[in-house]
Each structure stands twice: as C-alpha cells, then as structure tokens.
Length: 294
Ligand code: ADP
Ligand code: MG
Image (cartoon, rainbow, N blue to C red; front, top):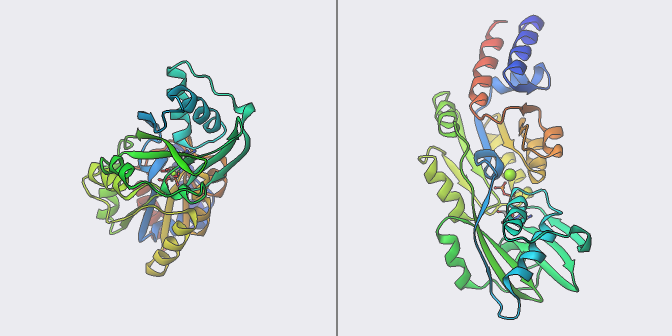
C-alpha cells in the first residue's frame, strides 16, 4: 500500500483502540486465514468468582486452607488468583504474601509455595505430578459441570478443591461469526480442562471451529506452528503463558487492559479496548488498505 494510505489506516485503527506496531503488520492482518484465541482472559473476561471451596481433610480447617491458598495466590497474577484472594477476604481472611517461601509459577499448571513448613501446590490436575500426587478420580466429577476446577495438594495428597466460574466477553460471538464471513478459520486454545473448554464453546453457540484444551504454553506454540503451514495465522492472548504463542504467530494480538505486561510487549497488535470485534474490523481495514496500491 502507499505510505500515506498505511499511515492513515494505522492512525484510524489507533483512535479506535487498536494499536498496530507498523505497516508490515497491517499488511499481514489482511492475509489472515486462521485466528486462534486463548480462552481465559481473552474469550472470557478473566474475572473469576469462586463457586465452591472445600477442604478434603478433617485435620485441615477450611479457614486454614483458605489462608494458605490466598497467601500463595496473592503472589500470582493469574485471573484465578484474584478470585481466590477476594473469596478469602469475603470470609475475613487477609492474605500474607510475606510468609510464603519458594513461590513458583508453572504456566498452564498452577503455582507452588512453602508456608508454615508445608509445600503447597495449587492448580489443575497437571500439577498433581509436581506434588508427587495421584489424581483422585472421584474429584473429577466436579469438572463435568464445565466449571474451572482447582486442586490443592500437600504432602503428596489432595487436601482441597475449589471451582470457579468466568463469563464470555460481550461481542465474542459477533466477532467469530464475522471472521467466518471473511473466510477465516477460528480456534480456541486453552490450558483449562476439556469440560470447561466445551462449556465456553457451548456459550459461543459452537461458532468456533477448533477447540483444543489442557495445553501447556509450548503446546500452544506447536499448534500455532501447525496452523502457519495452512496459512497466515493470528494468535490472540492475554497471559504471560501466551507470550511464546503470540511471538511465533504471523500476528500476535494481545489484550491491552487486562493483559500482562509481557503479552503487551510481545504482541504485534494491541487491543486497547479489549473488544474482540476490533479484530475482524482491522482485517477489513487492512484488506482495503492493501487494495489501494493495485
Ligand atoms: P488459558 O490458556 O485458558 O488462558 P491458563 O494457561 O492461563 O489458561 O491456565 C491454565 C490452567 O492452569 C488454569 O485453568 C488453572 O487450572 C491452572 N493455573 C494457572 N495459574 C494458576 C493459579 N495461579 N492458581 C491456580 N491454578 C492456576
Ligand atoms: Mg489466558
């Protein structure tokens, strides 16, 4: 496209809340054949609320467990962490991040912290292996409702379980349908369980063509690499764990407001308003701009 057309297009996009880091990305956007979305914080609002929190041990009271969990989660920036801290506060439990030692984040799995002499792991069933723990099959029933399930492990045993809910962002169905009408394939890639992914898929009226769940950040990278063989691929994400997939995609689009600083730095395009509908709009804009040269 002409430099003037490109400049105008970039400026127009920026005023509507879409920051495109250069004319090259504007051009690639118009050639997009596949758009892959992260789930938590991208398709969904990432504003979880706790719907159930239980101790599985008679010798560990609910408030003690919640105190441990909220203290460790207060050191995490995952959207689930804020919900657990809030849930604790609603029961007058104030987190104490300063008493947590050896905090560690396992992207796509959960977190670890040492507290009052106990090694505690909080996350999905993948983190069970790190806690040297067997997955208890009876607990998996909770996942069937399609809620996001969290497990708490300590001393080689599951000691607690909780469920959380999150809602889809407004405009997502519209955006996906519009991408479809532009001849673009859509996919959802998530670290959450299959059941939770299918629940979100259902909420979207099954508009998404591809759903892949229980993915680690490196699995997302592999899938994006596969998509790139089919055609120009955009990846939309918000989390630290999405940064590698955003970087490997032809176009990385990061959520601007809720997104982590790392995702925002990695993205080639930043959705300042967090409005997914801006993506098909940007693709149309790009196609129009490219056409101006020919
Ligand atoms: P998505 O790919 O949908 O954005 P994430 O990769 O952010 O999901 O997270 C994947 C899963 O890892 C979550 O569903 C959760 O089970 C687990 N997890 C990650 N961080 C935490 C945390 N701080 N506390 C508990 N669980 C976590
Ligand atoms: Mg996410």
